[in-house]
Length: 450
View (cartoon, rainbow, N blue to C red):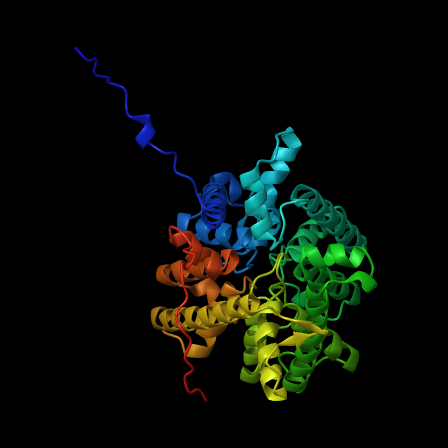
């Protein structure tokens, strides 16, 4: 008589595995949930009362996704414990889920597996698995070194004014600035109390720019300008161009606005315009009242926020390279050339397809969320668009709408911030089971366009 096994058929059971995209999605979501629970504790609030869970979730999402939008004032609502939780979430979010997990593995001496290397390589757009761990170490060291330098410089500026509290301010704002988070504890509306303070403006601006360049570019810069890759050249040129154009636009549109630049001296106007051109690149700090700006300025800032920072950095947006790639195609068509060329290098078709896909998906997503936010909050389209683009680009600038959001509005912004941080393509790949490789190609036939 045959023996019947009562054990489960293990051959048919397979341990579920997550794709690299799903790993990133689940990782960020897990960090946000843990952060929300910690921030909802009575110990995290200055008055010792539990923070409403939705507000705690909003703050945790904004900190982890380095967005900077807040519904509760960080300086007054949260206790020291709460502020430190926010600071930790900013640091982990700036590193990215995989870098943070690899840092933990390195600290405990655990070996980095192949799967972790694959996910990390995709996170930083690396084309080879070799050197992933070494690159991660460099990312961690560069981050800590820049943040330490920024914290020291800001502490030197603030300690004479605030005493030892100035050192804490220096650390908090250096970490927040380099990670393009935009959280502040100044008791002002962001950095509006330092609109003409040259050291604060320049130190914070440099931290914002360095964080937004991307770690690959920072590594390239450490090897010297003569050995820059095409990616680094495009990022640096685009960053300088956008900052210059942004400064000119803010200066032009706000020059006579008494509520923003109008009452400042010429050097003060230039400094304030420069800072407001840097901060939309996903930083979130501001030294003038954003809500008092004129509509043309707000639209210019919307464009800067939508473009955002660069790949592999701490910022958001569609990224500078995604913005430039379609422009290279337009330039090539205007010249009658079949190939998009930048710095005497031809861009591969796959790069163009990816850039156009990201840009179009981002436009569709932003418009849809802006319409929903406009309906839920009963505001006109431009304020809703500004808030949504600020959330999608993980910027953190606001015209004043975020603190008064309804429950539905908070959910919409939380969704937008999370989507903007993980990326639309990552979200799309994470929600699909598998990327299919076509087995054959259809015949080609042109269509009429234009």
